[in-house]
Length: 56
Image 1: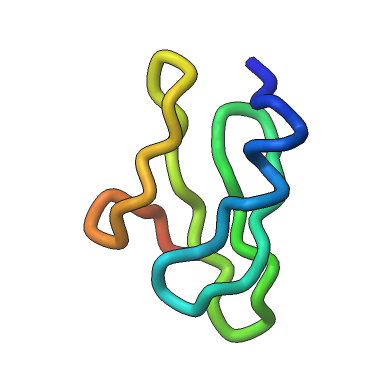
Image 2: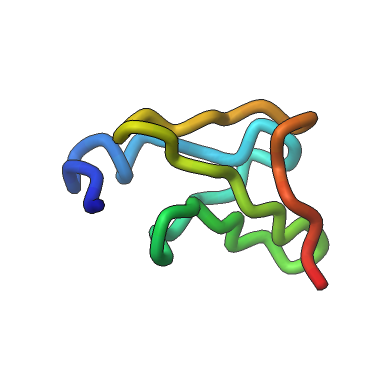
C-alpha cells in the first residue's frame, strides 16, 4: 500500500522530527539515532510513539 507522495513529503517522525520513508506497510524514521517504524493501518499512518516499533 503506497501513500501519496505529497503526504509523505510533509510527514515527520513525532519523536525526532526527521523525514519518514515508506517500506512495506510501515513508515521508517530516517534519523540516525531514532529509526522508529510506524505502522500504516488501512492506509492511515499511525504516528504515535507508543505504537512504533523500535529498531532491531
